[in-house]
Image (tube, rainbow, N blue to C red; front, top):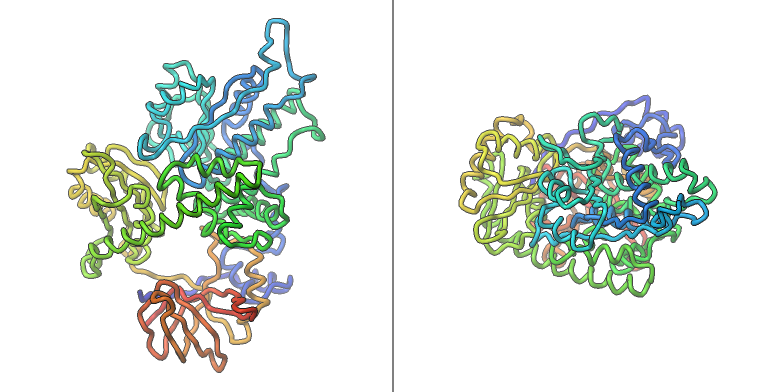
Amino acid sequence: MTALFGDRPFDAAAAQRLAQSGLPAPLARVLAARGVTRYDELDFAARDLIPPSSLAHVGAAACLLADNIEQGKRLLIIADYDCDGATACAVGVRGLRALAALPTANAPATASDKTARRRACVDFLVPNRFEYGYGLTPEIVDLAATRKPDLLITVDNGIASVDGVARATALGIDVLITDHHLPGRELPAARVIVNPNQDGCGFPSKHLAGVGVMFYVLLALRAEQRRRGHWTEQTQPRLDHLLDLVALGTVADVVRLDRNNRILVAEGLQRIRSGRMQPGIATLFQVAGRDARTARATDLGFALGPRLNAAGRLTDMSLGIECLLADDTERALALARQLDQLNRDRREIEAGMQFDALLDVREEDVASRRTIALFNETWHPGVVGLVAARIKERFHRPTIAFAPADGERMRGSGRSIDGVHLRDTLDLVTKLQPALIEKFGGHAMAAGLTLRARDFATFADVFEQAAAASSDPALYQRTVATDGPLAPDELSFTLVDAIERQIWGQGFAPPLFVNEFIVLEQRLVKDQHLKLTLDLRGRKVNAIWFRHTDTLPSQVQLAYRLQVDDFQGQRRVTLVIEHASL
C-alpha cells in the first residue's frame, strides 16, 4: 500500500554530540530524533532503574507478602494467558519460591506460632480463556478456592476484577493485584493494588509491562525481608536471574520502551547472550532457530513471544508457563517443541482467517470510514487479535475482529493506530449506548470486549460514531515517519552492527530510512515475497519486501530497514522494504 513519507525532526546539536562520541552519523540522527541527547543515555545499567519505592503501594504489597511467607501461608498466582502474563507468572513463582525459603535461624517463631517455620507454598493457576474469559472472575476464584489458598496474587490482570475480588473476600481469601492495564471507574476492593497507572501513583514510567510490575514487587519484598533481618546484602537471593523473563514479557507485550523498560530489556538480553538464562528461554531460542548468543529484542518479539502466545491462543497457557518454570533442559525442550507446533498450527489458522477478512473488507468502503469491525462465525476466538492487527496494518484503521464466544455472545479483540486510544474509544461507546458492551478492557493500542451476538451491527455503527467524535481526521491518513535518506557508502556493516547494538521497540522505533531507487530486477519468491535488485546512485543493493506481491515501477521511493544477510556464507547488506510511495 502506498504511503506518504515524512522525515522525523531531530536535534542537530544532539546528533553532532552523539556522532562525536563515535556513533555512525545516520545512527546519531536516528537517536537524536528519539530524544537521546547524550551518549551516556545509551548505558543501560540495572543501577539506573527507577527505585521500587516510587511505585504506589509496593511497600504494602511487600509487607503483605512477607507476613504470608513468615506464616507459611499458601500463595496462588492467578496468571494471564498471553506472553506478558506467562512471564509475569514465571517471575512470580520463581521469585517468591526463592524468597519464601527463609533461613530457619532467622525466621521469627514463638512457641505458639509453629507455622512460622513452615516454608510458604507458591503455585499458579492460569484461566483457560475459552472457559473462563479474562481476569480474576468469580468462577476463577471458585476454582482457585479448591486449592485452599490464603492469598491470591494476580499478574498482568485484576485491575478490572471487581466481582472476582468480592467473591474472594466472601470466601475469606486475600487478594494482591499486580497489573499495568488502565483502571476502570471502579477499583476492586483488594488488600493491595500495585499498578503504575492507578490514580495517585507517581511512578515515572507508566509503561511497565505486567512482568515488570511483578519484578518490582519482588524487589520490594526482598528489601522488606532484609529490613526484618531475614537476609543481608550478601545472603539475599539473587533476582537478576529473572531478567531474561522480564525482557521477554516486556518486548512481547509491545509496551512503550521508555528508558526504564529499555534498561530491563538490555539487562535481560545481556544475560541471554552470555548463556545465563532459564532453560525454557534457551530451548525456545533453539526451536525457533535463533542464536541466543546474538539475541536481539526482535528475537523476543517475533520468535519467542509468538510461540508462547500460541499456547494461550489455541489451548492453555499452562504449557507455556511450565516451559518457563522447567529447570530440566530435556523437559524444557519437549515443552518448547509443543509450543513450536502450536505456533505452526496458529499460523495456518490465522492465514485462513485473514483470507476471510480480506474478502469482507473493500478499499472503497474503508475510505469513507474510520473503523473496521469484523465477525465470522467460523473464526477461532484465540486468533482474532492477530487478524485485527493484520487488517489494521493493511488499511490503517482501528480494527476489532470478533469470534463466537457461546451461543449468545461474541468476543472481540482490537488493535488501533497511533493517536486513536482504543480503550477510551470503547469507553465512549459505553457512554453513547450504555447497555451495548457487556465488558471490555485494554489500553491505547489494544483492547478486548464481549458483546451479545445480536448487537454486532449496532456496535459497528456506534464504534464508528465514537471514533469520529473523538479523533482527528488527519490521523487516518497513513503518514510514515522516516529517518531520511542514506548515502550509498552508508549502506555498511558498520551501520547495521551499530544499529543492532541498540534496544528498539514500541515507542523507540528502529530506524526506517527512505531513498529513491531505480528497480533493476524484481521477482516473486515462494509466491508471496518480492525479491529486488535496486540501484542507489550507482550502487547495486539487494532488497526484499515480505508478503508483498505487486510489482513496482522502474523508479520508486522506498522506506526500508537494514539487515545483514548471511546467505550461503556470503555476508551482505540487504534492505527490508516496508513501504512505497508510488
